[in-house]
Image (cartoon, rainbow, N blue to C red; front, side):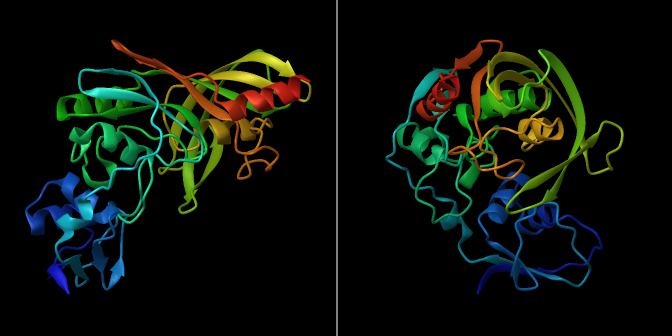
Length: 296
């Protein structure tokens, strides 16, 4: 049973645009419906906002989809690093997703934020991505920003899109890279769910790839491993992980681009700054334990 349905009459139209037009809703609302699994094309759930429709296909939206938008607050620990006008920076633990992918998930960082800042519900893209302006990988730790109102959401999204944030990460890698270095790669998502990124030298990528520069500084040699400080200019999925793997120095514990030789990939978002927005997160316990083990 569907809330709304229609037959596509325009070849090559994006699914989110078709939803916004036929439901007379915003593009953000359309994307929320997709993320919630509330949209079917020819009877199959489709979540990709850029999915291109063929003329004659049937689009259905589940009945009462607004009920799917409701997030349940989570009672897990939330470490607030700092907050400002319409935004909050929290310390994300490794292993916890930034936001849920389905309405029936019971714990995520966003749901913990919601328990303390209920005004975040509906901000920005709304639904399961309320207030989300950027995302750390599930197994990464450190500074994660959320917008608590629409003006802050717009400001933060513009800041990330324009590469205005100064971001610093700490990573433990295999081998000993150069003392100082810079790298530009063309990165492209080559697999979804689970996600995987491919890398080529700058200039060798396709139209689907994105140029992703970063800089690093060697902070400490730890036998056969090293502690590096990394400053990416962009925020592409898995950028630091795939870049160091391409260099021959995969992150310790990165089973996807290296090997599972630590509890998780050793990557920590230690600092973020743009204007009056600034937050720092100390190394978490598991990161410190690996450092101490390597030092000894």
